[in-house]
Amino acid sequence: MVPLMEAFVKAVKSAVKDKLNNDVEVPGFKLRNSGNMTSYEAKKVAEQLMDSNLIKWEDLLESMKFSIEGLVPVWAEKTEQTIAEARKDLKSRLSEVAISKPKASSITRIK
Image (cartoon, helix red, strand yellow):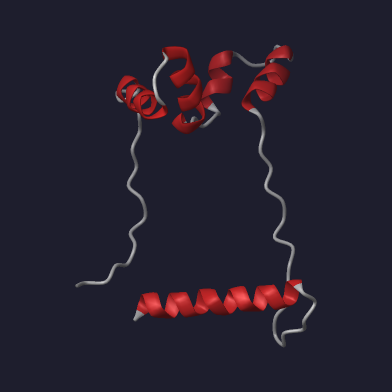
């Protein structure tokens, strides 16, 4: 029952959003600005902050999050591997420093 209700709510929200985007008034609803998402290019950040001579590399690296996916294509090219091989190789090499956290629980239907 829950998946059906979630699908219905999602469909209603989508229909309302489409109408509002097309300047059709929907009683009880309005579009709101959900703000901006800011991101930074790691290389430019590193250059800017390291040029200040105020922090050390260790400080900078400890404050950054690392995603393996951005490195996979570069690793594949440098090691002459396929993307899949490079991903597997990187995960293996980094396995001792990887930190895994459980995801939030989700509801599933019992069959």
